[in-house]
Length: 196
Image 1 (spheres, rainbow, N blue to C red):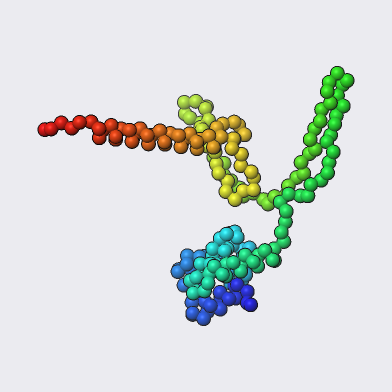
Image 2 (spheres, rainbow, N blue to C red):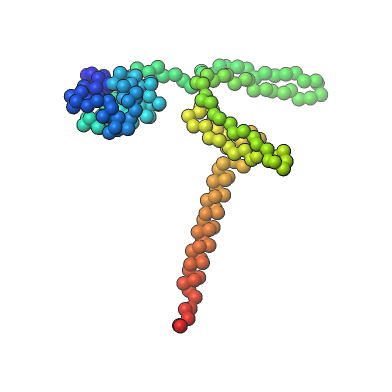
């Protein structure tokens, strides 16, 4: 069986289509189409996008896009080196310090092993601004970092309200508002109408 890129290129050339024509029909950048035909899937934005691009490209050419995209997944799992995100556990003994005779011994947990992560993309931080009347800094809103390997906590490091609590509060307010609107509409319908 030929590789995915060669199969897609052969189907495109059989239909006398240029990469520009495929771009106009599928809205997949020409550089991405070239990478797909060269089997350089690591040049695409990510594995999910690569699978979607291959499926869309194959469907446009009249091929079974889902089948070809699943072949891409099979190729990746067989050819890729699967790395563990966490290193194997290292047996370490707890560190016991001997305090003065009057105090109880303190037991410290062993240090956690470092986890190697990929470089994080730079995230622009909002600048602090000061108001003309004073030096009070402006409110700093939380930012979302997508595609980050850093774990997201529900509470900021400087304290604050957990995200789940904000969402729960919004849902409660929405339900209360809905109840008030329904009760107002039902009470308006139950009032006797005057004949004019």
